[in-house]
Each structure stands twice: as C-alpha cells, then as structure tokens.
Image (cartoon, rainbow, N blue to C red; front, side, top):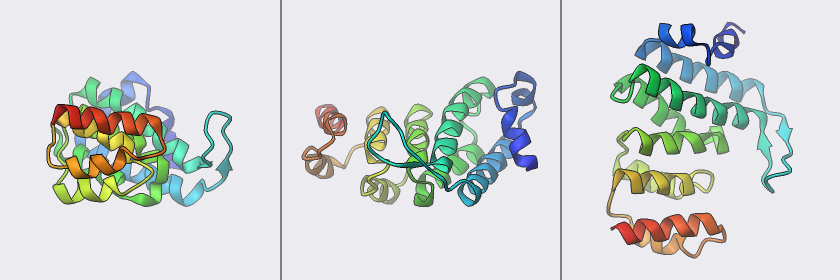
Length: 168
C-alpha cells in the first residue's frame, strides 16, 4: 500500500520535485503492476461501448500525470523514464490503459524500434494512438499498414491513418 501513498502525491509539487529519473521509472513499473494485480473490476462507461477494467483507468490516468511530470522535471531525454514508458506500452496485459503511453512516445520523441511499431500496429487497443505518435515522430515505412487501417470501422483511426499517409 506504500506505493499507493506515493501515487496520491503525484500532483503535489513537492513530491514531483523530489522525483529522480530512477525513482519515477520505478514508480511507473510498480504502480502498473500493482494496479494490474489488484484492480480487475469491470467498469461500465456511458461514453464508450468498450468495457474498461479499473486497472486500465488507473494506468491511463498515470500516463496523463506523466505528461505533466516529464515536462516539469525535464525528463524528456531520460533513458530510464523512456524505458519504463515503452515497457508499459509494450505490455498488452495493461490493455486500454496504455493509450496515453502511446501518445507520450510521440509527444516526447521516445524511440520505438520498427519491430515494436509493427507489434503495436497490430494491437487493437493502442494502434490508433500509436498512429498519432508516428506522425509526430515522422516515422516512415508503414504506408502499407496505414492503407489497411484506413478500412477500419473507427472513424478517428481512419482519419489518423490518412493523415499519416498525407505526411509521408
């Protein structure tokens, strides 16, 4: 439970100032694992037809908090923080909670290998958010995959795939 006490302070300026690259990367790993193991309750949403689990909400919210922390602490070039974020993104156990992590990759210009991108483009829970990041990163080489994604049922993802193709 000590880990949750840390998370409750995540928006506290003093707590944020005390974070190091290593302590933040450890916090990311520990929180995601804790939530996955202990928060598997289904949550209905009036805004989405998809069922979300409580741990997905928690992880998604952590990604949003990380956006602010990375900016405030200037951890944009932090290898341990980047590694922790990519590890969460690549771990499909964390489900839809990884959407914000996919967006962090593009916003902070984190590096994904071609193999990682190919894997994530097959992941229906994050591929739309990944396309947004690929455009921001100006990462080329996925035109064929984008052409198949354009046939997606999801309008916003189709739109993002078209934008990707327009920029390449």
